[in-house]
Image (cartoon, rainbow, N blue to C red; front, side, top):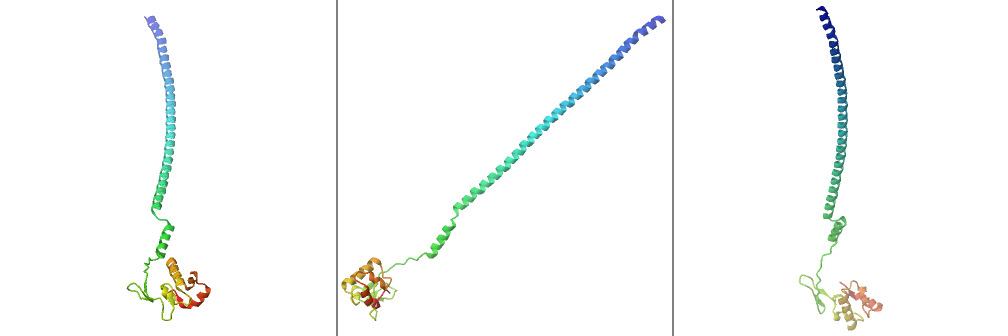
Amino acid sequence: MEDEKLDSTTTSQPQEVNSTVRDILREATLGAQGHAGTSQNFEAFADIEDELNTHKKIRFEIDRRSLIAGVFAFILVAVLGIYFAYNAIASTRPQGDQVVKKSVDDKTATPEITATTPETTGNITTCPEGTAPQTAVDTNGVVNINIATENDLTTLSGVGPAIAKRIIEYREQNGNFRSIEEITEVKGIGDAMYAKIKDKIRVK
């Protein structure tokens, strides 16, 4: 009996040892696998983090460029708006030289004068109502060559009917005499005749 018990104890001990060794090896294997898996997980997390950081950098760069482009676009639109507004105002406002010219023209404009032709009867010139009558020949015998008739002009020394007609024709063609010297422009009146009549003629 004792021998049989001894044999059975001796036989079971190697089996227990083998079982223990297997457990130790399995735990060691699982531990190694666990460490390897943890290391792989860390590497995977690191790759993901790097990729996220890369995406963040790219997105930041895109946002920065978009912001710069938006600022430039805003400035461009503002400048164009100011330019077109200035042109619109300038086109509706008269130029400075035009304003000055119009002002000067208004100040220097000569009022229109309606000329009236006096009617001459003999030596007395009748003027429109409200004006004093003018005489072609005054009391001193001085002749107004601008209103004198042919008869009035023939009272001057050396002036006959022919020269008197030329004086009237010149006056009708060129307007009133502006000075007594202008009478020398009439054909037939030279310096010698002018010297004789200059004290006997007037233009007013």
